[in-house]
Length: 67
Image 1 (cartoon, one colour):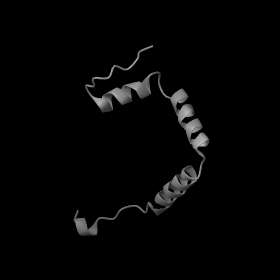
Image 2: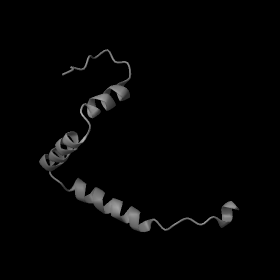
Image 3: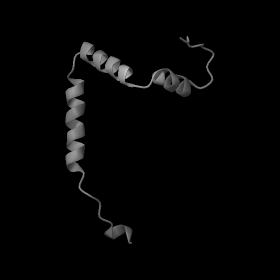
Image 4: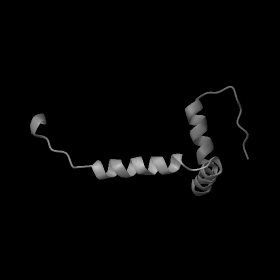
């Protein structure tokens, strides 16, 4: 198949929905944003955020507390 003849599906509705959601989230108060993060933490696997933090930090000189 020639690259010039390649047809892609129309995703303009998806992009518009994403843009609208970003605007809605940006308009929330700080407290509402913190509440969303707390809810995400409750729904995520146990210590999932801690693992993500340590992986992004790599080998760090800071010891994270363990529970």
